[in-house]
Length: 176
Image 1 (spheres, helix red, strand yellow):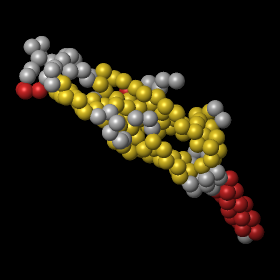
Image 2 (image 1 turned 45 degrees about the vertical axis):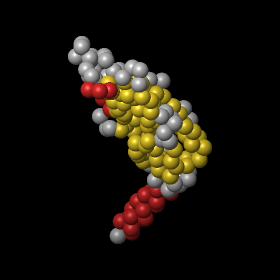
Image 3 (image 1 turned 90 degrees about the vertical axis):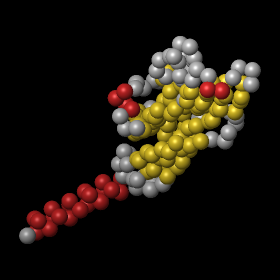
Image 4 (image 1 turned 180 degrees about the horizontal axis):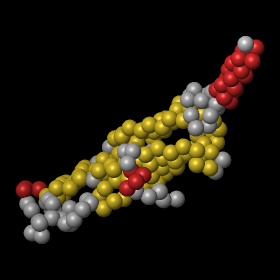
């Protein structure tokens, strides 16, 4: 009976020490698409017959520490993936990327921080008056966000990773 009681106490101490220490990987990353202030504006090509509207889009990223230990010196690197289409060009949209970074000096235990990525300018364009291209190219195009890939480094080592949508890491490659 004493042996069982001793094992229970030792097991409880082990579990307590594990939670008190906190695992470094207790980080949850989430993101939401965000339309930024309209600084890109709209343009109408009266002489060219082309209507264009540009908007700045990006992501709001939340990093949450679910551990019982504060995290310091985190470097966040991200890649925004988007598709760009040219008016009058046949074929699929071009894949484009924009990289950025953010530093988290301290992330409190059971704490959360939020930041915005750098914006990308997405453009919508169309031919006015119902005109069409003779080569069969689309007369309306719109750039779109494809996803976001985030890596968090601690002391120069990969610490956490997140991709939106989840399958992005299998279709794209990380660019340092």
